[in-house]
Amino acid sequence: MNVILDYGLGNLRSLQTALLKGGIDTVITDDIDIIKAAKTIFLPGVGAYRDASNNLWERGLAEIIIEKAKEGTFIIGICLGMQLLYDRSFENGNYKGLGLITGDIKKLTIMPKVPHMGWNSLIKTKSDPLTKYISEGDYVYFVHSYYADSKGDENIAIVQYGEDIPAIVRKDNIIGFQFHPEKSSQVGVNLILALKEVIMWLYILQ
Image 1 (tube, rainbow, N blue to C red):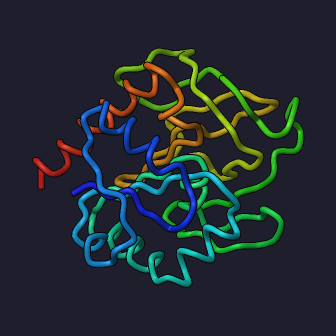
Image 2: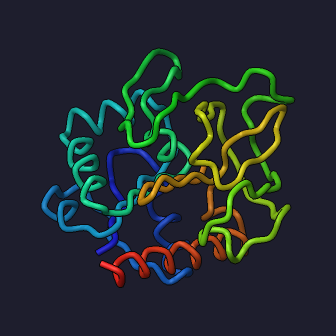
């Protein structure tokens, strides 16, 4: 079962529709029993980090996600959802993330314009099955004012916007997209197709 986590924020239906087009069937839920049975958990992202963090921790969802990640369940964050995968965010304060990837979320400061909104081209930095159906320079759609500041070991693809910004990250079964695949036309569909294959292969191997 693939779950889109409903934690009170996010573009749930548009993400669900895009995933279905790429062959990934999902349910939208905040039911703890269903989440505990999930093989894949999507963290969607639209909204404020503070609200997202508070909702996850206060409702007991953060602990479940962390435990599921340790079990090998795929945790896939999109935009704000990707930022939640890191240790903490300094978006209008200091808020706790899930700590699944080491690093902090910081405000874009030296960029041409903030927020970073619109299309930007991907630069591959590491070979990974997630990028098998996309080409160097493919455009994807961003809407964000904060970015992941880390050692970058998890980076699979970046974009240049004043400096290098992580766009696709992966640490084993933890995956993040800073942009919105569901708004990225055919490139987004191609990424979802590759994601489906990655998910399928893991469970075949298990």
